[in-house]
Amino acid sequence: MQFSLILTDKPTLDPSCLRSETDPDTFDEVWVVHGGSTILPQQHNGLRSFRSVSQLTETLAGRLAHEQMGLRLYAAGSEDFIWKTARIAEQAGLSRDEYSLFKLGPLTRTVMCAHCHTLTRNISMTLITCDGCGATLEVRDHFSRLHGAYLGVQADAETPGILPTVEALT
Image (tube, rainbow, N blue to C red):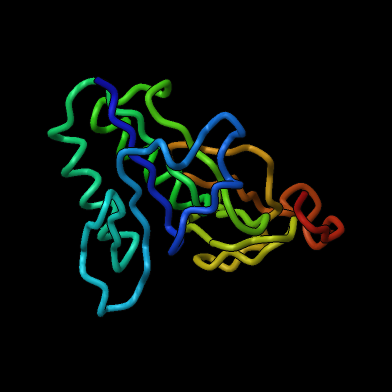
């Protein structure tokens, strides 16, 4: 028997984020993050609400540690959220074929500085200042699933003081 679980870091599941052949009404459980300290983990008719992403992901890790074969996991949300979910799934032994990821929201990136390894979040431009070491970084298209981030390298490493043109990420 196959069991399907979808989770999102949003207060509701937006069906438009799923592939056209995926019907949200067919999921056995839907987990959402409502946010706020007054939200208690509660379940009603297959819908389970959480107060934070960390509460949801901790519950997911515990759930996956005891899950049987046949689980289908779907994660829809911000890039940070979906890659955190992927790491939890893989640590629990799920293969890449057993979970699906759907990115929602604006086109922003999490960037990892190649020099100090600090993560800088919600980046929408090709040049940024690292939150850790203050270096001017050029955002590359290389993505690390392990870190859930794109690579940022010193923008003027080859020609000190000369920076490339700042552009919006596409």
